[in-house]
Image (cartoon, rainbow, N blue to C red; front, side):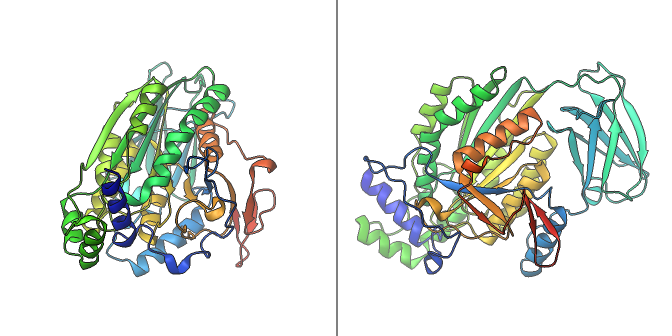
Length: 438
């Protein structure tokens, strides 16, 4: 069994390209770090390092990023960049979470979504309604306890504020927390991270949100028949297979996707994570769309519940499944699921694009692992001008607490290991004189 896992992992490294940037080793996110090995050869809790970025707080930069990506990758689905932020607040200006927002235009097209814990819903007029014009916005509480409000808006501004009088602002009393993980051969460090860190993450969430009922779910995915066929035709895969054990082609995937639905038992969830192994993945792209479809199909609770998903991967979808992937991202957005992608070692420009779109449209933050811990392969530097390197565990905890509480939890000075882009009080000045916000 260990021989098969080793062979599959090496194939995932040499053939899939999930760790193929060997020429760039040491360039990536720099840092090097002291490493994080423990006495048993595994990664110590609290070792992996990362940074995060909010494309909604830097939307002009995001618009330029999307345009530049599509210049060289015009066959990929285009992300909508005509965003309008709809803010639902009470009479005191406090954000109203989990409110239902319906927007219609003068052609009769209609779009519905729900607000996040920050009281925000995002509208993309071209994609959601087929264009601009005048808009009618209806806001209401899902339980019907407050009379709905209907107002008319124009598109001259990129943000609309709608007051919902007499709304009782209550923070979510429940949290559905899902982890969607690529378990192909190059993802061993990340699977081990989740297995070792989930207790500490859970303890911190419980300490900071003691009144919140938390459930956990796990979705793991690998690749489908198209990926396996491509790997089987790769001469290098056959050579490596013969060296490592007489395999003349990569073995068929053990599974495409596995789903472990929500449970309020952390021990049960941990046992599911502990049972996962990295393996398979004969070519670089993986079945991201299948993982997202399974994630969307989990038994998410309705009502005033925070719905969060951490999407941990290093590879994009196959090109012919990119549109389906984008469609599943839209499903998550409409369901009020906030997605936090975590880019692992070997992440490419294509996987960064998909992950950043997922984070932006669902109001999450794009997280990327850095080289500072010295664990795993080299991590590609993303197209981001400034960031703060922190422990990955802390980033996950702070993002969860921020989403449920409705107020951004910033890292303390003791949490920041390294800064890129010379931020001053959370603001970076770019070469063109514009500002970026951490």
